[in-house]
Length: 234
Image 1 (cartoon, rainbow, N blue to C red):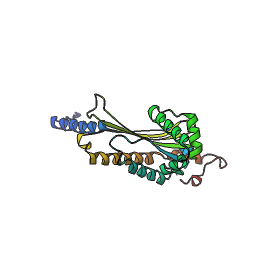
Image 2 (image 1 turned 45 degrees about the horizontal axis):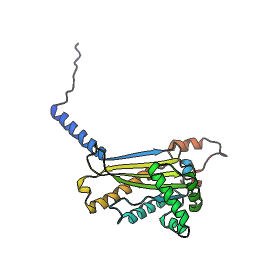
Image 3 (image 1 turned 180 degrees about the vertical axis):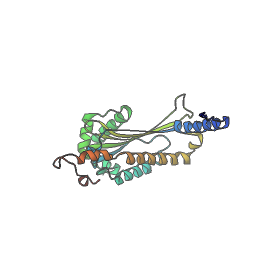
Image 4 (image 1 turned 30 degrees about the vertical axis):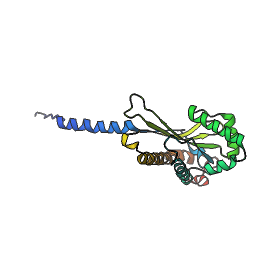
């Protein structure tokens, strides 16, 4: 008895179609990417008070910036995993009669956004004044692309949760987007900023969770040492 062997050949047209699809996917991922970094165990950071910090508006977004930040702040307040949120207006009230602290806050924010390093002395003062051991920072940067970029402008938007006194990064969502020519028209420009910041917070919300296997491990602990999910509202 002879065994019959068959071999599947991909036609030229199928190969061309596959190459086209891969090319489209590559171009899409090249112009917009999302990165997430987090600690291995997020349980200790659930439902902790946070202060919402924002950088200065990028050029050409000044008119819509306050509305964007208000929208993000409200979304953060709605997240079940976060505790009390000290917002922009809360912060302004606390700094109203303390120009020195307001200046220190600007110094701290500039250092943090430019270097990613938290000035621990300033952070301690802000943590005490804002009554928040954790900061949620919205960092929105607009700058020219490199020579490998298909556009002459790109945005890098970060939403990060950091421990105030140590500067440790707890959770980060980063979105990068190269602007197409039709996205640089004022109306499209503003709408795109709103769309991307909303997506950023959605990514933060979907990722800032306690995985089931972490809860399983917790439930295997002795009752005296076990963390009850109901006690932290999850």
